[in-house]
Image (cartoon, rainbow, N blue to C red):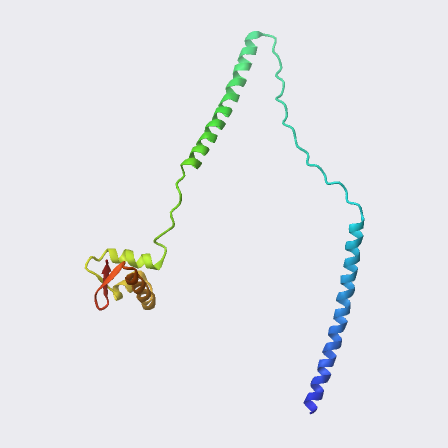
Length: 168
């Protein structure tokens, strides 16, 4: 009876503490709701438009008085500009060809334990024992027996003797 009374007092104290915490949380929530409502009442500013930068015009070439000098300057400028454009076109064409010619990926078949065991069995034409499979593959007895059972159901392997299997 005394334990029950002590337990009830403890529960009563915990309830009081929880009710105080609940009041504090509700006050904070009310204050946040007021702040959100005040922000909604304010008129929103128009969203800023994104500024699109215009490409800069090519710098104006200074004219040289002599015609011979003009020709050499123009040739030098033309030689420097032309390879960049041609190289850019070539790289774009190569990229398009690479994307177009890329074959579909095949899933990795040798990653599964079943394929690991079956590839090991290909080496042994007359059949292989479970102990040899366990040693070579690094799998447990249970894993190997499950793999062999599943493969024999599917018709991939057949039992030659007790504990000896070969590919079908």
